[in-house]
Image (tube, rainbow, N blue to C red):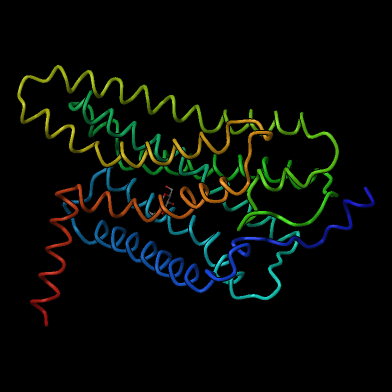
Length: 310
Ligand SMILES: *[C@@H]1O[C@H](CO)[C@@H](O)[C@H](O)[C@H]1NC(C)=O
């Protein structure tokens, strides 16, 4: 207990084992951050202004874009500041807050992606009842439930981690306060803690994932039974963007969280976690705008209007 209370500040190692690359990292990271925020903002604005994007699918996409902006804002600004700072520290409380929000937005994304799969399932497998099932009110409720679930799960996880005794060291070999590098600092035998963390993560990640798989199983069997090739193509194109985003997000999340601590190789993990904390949020607007005719059309309309008004 004595040692535990003595940890008031953590050191985030980040990329400081490659000192010559700091400026390059900084510039790349800053560009990625700006592109992520801008790309997702453009999607949000397009969905607000274009009346043809006023469907449940785009309501969820707008919410997802908003979520991605929040999600990257938890980690990247602090990473940028840390690259420039001489002392790469973060206080105990700031670390807890960062972990809370990172898990909050991550868990919400898990649930929101499941809601989007449910939306596609209803649209494709039950098209006649779709307008009734996916009413505006239901969409708002589904999104709200995702946010509340994310918040509660993150609260439980963060409280659990930050009441463990930290005594080995205060050096976090990572660029933000993530679960696995924090668990490495917990003193004593952490076997049961690990089991609990993995079980909670599995519960959180695998339940939405199963729901998504189930939805897509039904979607694909329905698409295969369609007689006209044109309908088949159309149905598939509305869910392919979502399917790509889901595969990227869940494959990294499952790989990162659902395995024992002994198999962590922190340097490899650090590199991989760049993927789900930085790369997927920027891919989301790219995937949705490049693969989606409606979004591309709306973007064209807005650009033409802007040009015409000049
Ligand atoms: C996302 O969904 C929540 C809950 O329904 C809602 O309060 C919020 O305004 C939505 N955000 C956007 C940007 O659509």
